[in-house]
Length: 419
Ligand code: UDP
Image (cartoon, rainbow, N blue to C red; front, top):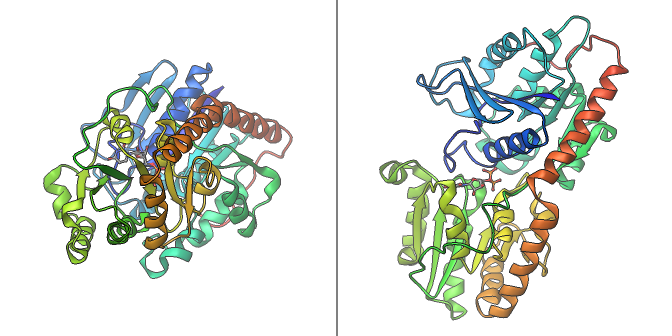
């Protein structure tokens, strides 16, 4: 198949760990590579966010990235990108002039708008089938972030419109299916394909980063409040009270270089909190870590803690599991599918530092439990979450969309609004 991916803010070529660069970038890159390995021709369209980027980058056999001019050629926060989706669709449709793709797969709601728009213009009397993966849902974000949610107002009606207008939706976890249903989306057109983990990179064998204290607990991800890193810091005094004082909390992600890291207000908030709790000497902020160094860091940890308020999927726990490290995870969203309580890790209620501390203490105090859970996590990651498997599931959804599109009338208007 000729497959077009649209990922407006999350380029597969971007460095990870910044505010808007995380799981979606990994997902789009790894899914595209795996589809190309299966013999498909994949082009990812993303917004040009720097002048020096070439128009087209050949990433590997069957996998190209196209930088489309849409808005200023510089970083723009993702919540300010909506006005440029028409331009993005123009650029994508222009690139399809010669030969439209067999399917277009939108990633995030705004890319879904561009995908529907470009798909309507391609060919005559035929709309390219549109598959949509939301990665995150505005309804969930609003529920948890309330007034702090910086999404544009239009998301409230445009996102469900994308869901209703797309030919198929790929949800990444079972919790998302319930949320989509609550948004009024026909569950008959939803397929589930989780995110995956690169099993050639993330595994138990290989270099191990140095560990300066008896125990290391690890938090990895974009440094945004909803990731709950402050809750892990708040767990440290409880851990100390439980007899685990020589514990380092290593925090990976956030900022850019080390200068930028310390001017990041979220970093300041976390450091102030650590100082207030008297645990500043236990908290180490590492900033953005390149992909290649991540496996060694995971392997050095006694436990990885994921304490988000909510989590659409969460690739970090899969990476930890693949490296054989047990995960303490808030029982929310995708973490309820990936982390199996008392089998590959321990679930804790959301926003509960005491519960995090008890779960971590249970692991730190019991090396054989750690290795039992770590081994099971590794087996689970290998059995279920290879990108090849995810690509095979996505391919099934593409085929269903193509079959459905062949059976439907040509022009289906986009619900919701004009761009
Ligand atoms: N990551 C990284 N370096 C960093 C911070 C994060 O490589 O400094 C990677 C991390 O290993 C994972 C991804 O970014 O692959 C984060 O994905 P996840 O789904 O856990 O979170 P999201 O960013 O989607 O909220």
